[in-house]
Image 1 (tube, rainbow, N blue to C red):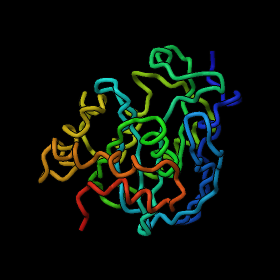
Image 2 (image 1 turned 135 degrees about the horizontal axis):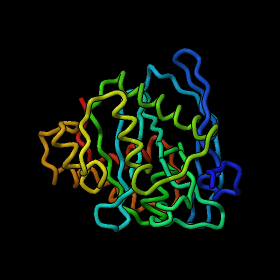
Image 3 (image 1 turned 90 degrees about the vertical axis):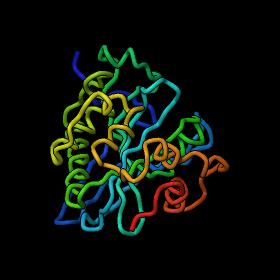
Length: 254
């Protein structure tokens, strides 16, 4: 059975990113910016946005822990000079009647999706709506590598729009695909801790991809975003303010 793009998808994964590039300017279509009330109540909103690659500065790995020992969801966020953040999440592409199953992911039950969106959507929906623990790890990458990685994500989206692929819980998932892309631009050795993202802090620390002046335990405490937004019951605030809030525990960059 072939993977398909023409199914009746769940709202959250109904679209995959598309883009055009002219010089340093990229125009992104299908950027998700839902407003969430609870798990089943939200305002659907897809946007077109424009970014300057020369203003792209930071790359962060974000893990979302929903209570399965060491098995978590991994996302990425890119930061710009104006403090705007844009998040990328490789996900199962559920149909409107389906729910997630890690076992189903072994047996070609789900297509692969790439959701790009506002942190006030992609992260708030996990911290405040689904009750997941979110951890943010700023990764030490040269700015040129950050820009190359950003474009690789966009190219991955275009590829999925043209040719659907299956999600595979073991070999083609939110973690393996991220490290495949990182491996194209940086020689960062990958071991089992990169695949069991609950051990991501130890892996990043050993590879000096995060500031090693802090211990792994200190990083876990600093990286957790939930305490700074758990009081919120809606997201009326401006997107950059939400992104600032969830990073209050992180070391200040120079």
